[in-house]
Length: 261
Image (cartoon, rainbow, N blue to C red; front, side, top):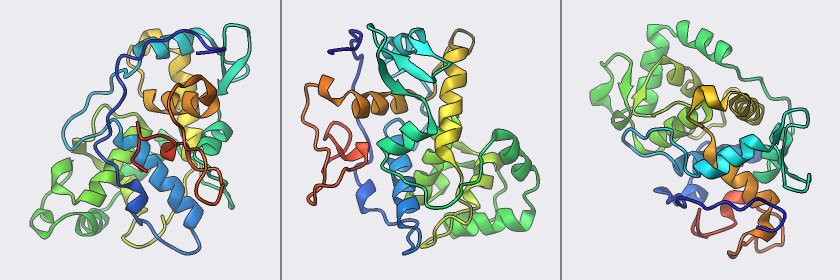
């Protein structure tokens, strides 16, 4: 790739889910942009998720090690061989590639905040969440729940949450995941709008700074998309970057490698 290092992709991810554009959950006329952002995260997470346990392995291990070796933490940027910036690891770069423009303040998301919410979930709230997302035959169960007990749309939300948080699997739904699920309701926008992009950018930065210790990189798909968006001239594949009206589309809709359009 011109201006980039030579990287051989071990495998192009094959998505199990190709209907993100058809989902309208959550839906609200006042939250269209955030809903699109939510769907984009769902589509990204679905590339590495399934209804059974999926380990958080490197899809492009050579790419990740190259990114880590060429990462400039002071700029939060992955550098090219000539010192050029290939892409930034920032909330702004993630929002831009998803074509998400926040129109209101977003609540910071941290694991400490989420764990605190999880520890305070009451039995009544857990029951409400269960009745919202699970068939009646599972209402009497206590967490942790199995991924397969939820309906299709709920599993998509669980996959998204698990991948954003960097969990190794979405098979087991514990109180941490339930705490984040509690903000969703069918046909409604999220009750709380979290700043997912900042959370993910910070986690990628932390992993690049500690890759030797952590061994496993949890956000490979985001790196793939950042490369695709900011170095699109280097990819010898057809990229449909604009919609029928000529407007820039979210990167998840650019290529049939990731999404049928």
